[in-house]
Length: 157
Image 1: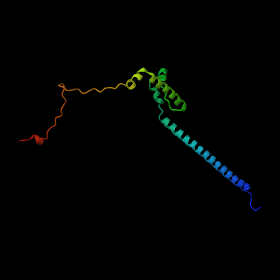
Image 2 (image 1 turned 180 degrees about the horizontal axis):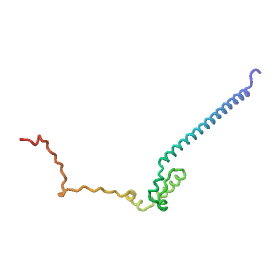
Image 3 (image 1 turned 60 degrees about the vertical axis):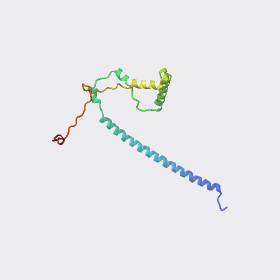
Image 4 (image 1 turned 90 degrees about the vertical axis):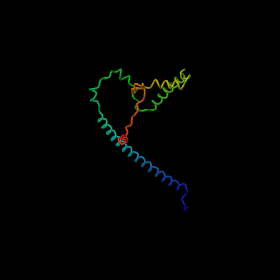
């Protein structure tokens, strides 16, 4: 009769543990809320600085002096992919896979893989501008540099 039973003792311990867990979770929620507010404030500051930088590089006034583009020229230019997301990455994998299959099935590639790759790279490279070569002497010999002797050497008696 002097000692309480183990069931009631463990019940109070479990209640204390449960209360501690609740306190911990509330603290975590509070800190997350405060951190998210701080992040939003930081993001707003970054956005403002980016907008200021964009205003500094505003080139809309130069559009008056530039020649105008036709709509066909604008559509001919490829749109730049700014961000690679999951969907674009999957599309890229599919298109490049199809391109690889076409290359592997091409008879020129099957006959000579390295030669066809080299030929493709040569056709894709811009033409190299050759520098004009220096004129050769009329007799075809190379120019020789003549070293002058010092005055002391030339005054021998």
